[in-house]
Length: 447
Ligand SMILES: Nc1nc2c(ncn2[C@@H]2O[C@H](COP(=O)(O)OP(=O)(O)O)[C@@H](O)[C@H]2O)c(=O)[nH]1
Ligand SMILES: [Mg+2]
Image (tube, rainbow, N blue to C red; front, side, top):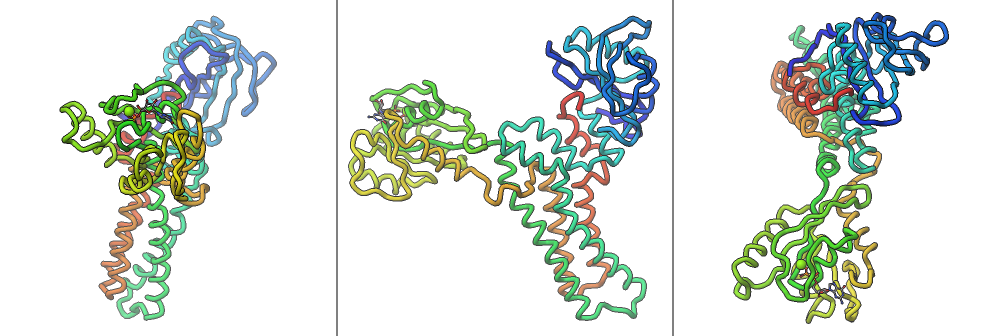
């Protein structure tokens, strides 16, 4: 993909789905947007004013009416892209939208690449790169929590979270560079202590941000929750109960489940994949296929974010067996067959057959996969962001130790500059082709 970084072309795109719908929106942005609008849109009642949705006809290049529509125009510097732009809200017919796009292309407009309108917003300085990423994250969010986290970055939360550390770097760098020009004026002890304290606070802020990245990854990729325990513990029955449908085969014969089976659910705002696996029992007792199933169960346990261990309540020494099995959430199953005499506070009592304890179990799992901190915290949602903040924190730590060891000012300055550059990369202040490819190529067309 090549990028029109100089914003030479006027671009157009369908911003809504290419399917019959109530309305469809075509967006146009770029240097010729105003001319194009005047040539193809005829307002019904006098002149069109910016920002005001205006009824009128849209014409093809030969003057034929393509649709009766509503047009909204934004002047240069005041639109989503930061360029002169307009939107046509058409009748939601793919035949009409294609005709309008064809006509725009015939008039010299270019079809936008995925994410190109948002790229223009970054190029014109309307938004920074983290907000652009957040726009895509909001659109693709599959749970409320993921949409809320992306929304915080969209409103500038991530950029704001690195503002303080960035200012500290810039100020410290200015102070150190000023002394470099005047070798007689070394930093005094008090100056060094003041700078060190400021840099330590900046480093702590970056570390705090980095700690949100595992939650960010969970919002993006969801969590894997494996149901683990002996055969006949009721794992497959529990999976079906959680899924609300008969997904897994259930049978009283031990060893029914061989392959792993996955079901996607939403628990407490987090997307969760629940995995039912073969029951684990001594390998001497089982045939070759079940043995493979047990190996698979152990693999799934190793890669899971949450292990739900199940032992039937009527099994001998059920509680001790359960604790020996270990797991993040402990379940005594089939409690309808007889509740245990000793009840441990950390154990969920469940009967999938009688629908007992399922809500409490879901809450227990949700607690394990939920947000680690206050849920209004800014979250690093992308690997690219994590790498930039990590680079910034590492270079800053090197600057701190150079300052601490009274290394030459040039050394401290060079590490501070490198830390600052990493934060600049985060915010998209230098847009290289790899960054553009990584961020914008997966965007929706029309955004
Ligand atoms: N009484 C009772 N039986 C259950 C319950 N859950 C599962 N079972 C039965 O236990 C047997 C094994 O269940 P299954 O889900 O296949 O266990 P898995 O081997 O752990 O997957 C089947 O006969 C189920 O009907 C329950 O909550 N109560
Ligand atoms: Mg099973």
